[in-house]
Image (cartoon, rainbow, N blue to C red):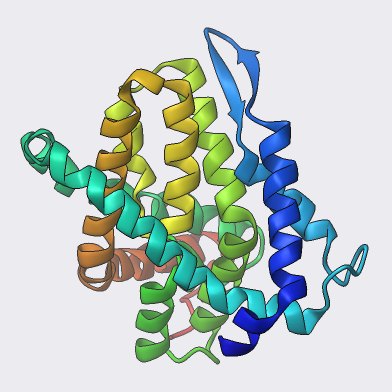
Length: 266
């Protein structure tokens, strides 16, 4: 991390990205009864992609690796800022306590969509690692401990982890904005759904929701942070006790239907 801190070029590139993105500002589009919100964070990520060695080569691969070491530090400061929002809204969050706990079952329910699609696309045991969770750091560690990261399950969870790192923030920001535009769910429900255990994804979603519902911005941020914290605490246990066993059972059922034979063992 010390090399990244001392890299003046890296800080200047980030500063330019921030300034340009903020100058562009928030862009909104009418979608049905609501609006789709594009935030400066999305512009910064898109522009940053083109700054890499695959495109304009403004930053090299070594500098990109150095920058990645600072992500955790910046998110730490961001979560400290969000933490100041949770305290004043503590009693509001407490009233929604059961909903915050039960929303974890929504995270588990995604495997019923993810595993069939993954297996339809040709994955086998990889689908269990890929689709049993959102595949962030705790889930990668869980799969690594049970199956090993050199296993099919390990390749699956690492594939989703990398895709989530690259595209997750963009996807969450746009999806939250789109859901807000159609006005199907209450803003607090959307805020709780944003907290899946990833600080960057939660921040993107909460930012879009706050722009869509400015009068509720503080409450949305508080619910998002509280939900994300709970997901981080109980997410691993939910994966271990419920999501992985369900994923394995669903995998065996679909395998028998697709290949007309017993599935390969883990």
